[in-house]
Image 1 (cartoon, rainbow, N blue to C red):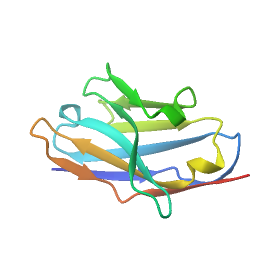
Image 2: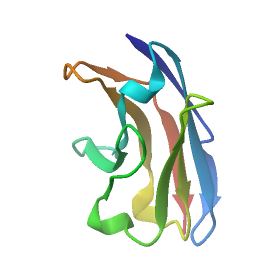
Image 3: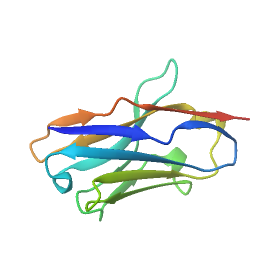
Length: 117
C-alpha cells in the first residue's frame, strides 16, 4: 500500500496558475500509475490527468488539455499537477490516485481548489 498526501490547493483567480503536489510513501513509487481526479459539488468524481509509471504515457481530460500538466519525480516520490489559466469550472476537490501492477488503488484525502471569476 502507498500513502498519498496532497498539498497546494487554495483560492485563486481565473487566469492564474496553481501547482498541486502529491507526496507518496510506502511501496516503490515507480511501480504505480498515478493520476489526479477532481470532484465538484454535486458532480461525480472525474479523472483529470494520468501518468504512467515511468512518465512516458500521459492522459488529460479534454477540458484541461493545453492548460494542465501532470509530471512525476520517481526519485522524490512525488507527482505534480501544474494548473495554468485556471477557470471557475476547475473549482473542485482534487484527489491524488495511485494504481499498482495488481490493479490495487489508493487515494489521497483531497485538496480544495477554488477559482474565483
